[in-house]
Length: 142
Image (cartoon, rainbow, N blue to C red):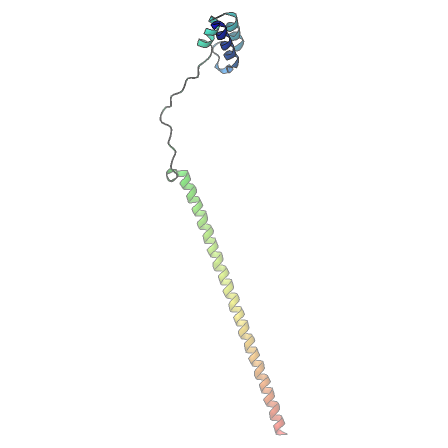
């Protein structure tokens, strides 16, 4: 019973093993050895037929993750963002100063236009007053 269980286990293991892990012989040869040589074939397969995956010892402790303020790439990224935001802020300030200057010029132009309109209105009023007085003087002289 043990021999049959060993045969079945070795046969299944041989058929499922990746072909890159076979030692010296190919899959067909190992299947033939496992099936044709009872008890010794399955033992040979399990002992020398395939390379065992050995757990590899780490060469040292795994690298600790860097804190964000210790990571030069992260800090460079922050500096780039700060520079970009500083440039954007400077551009907005310059744009705001330009708009304020334009608004001030427009306001001064409107004030000048209003003063000019007021002078014209006053001049017109004086002219009408002079014409009226001149007309009254002519009527008095008759």
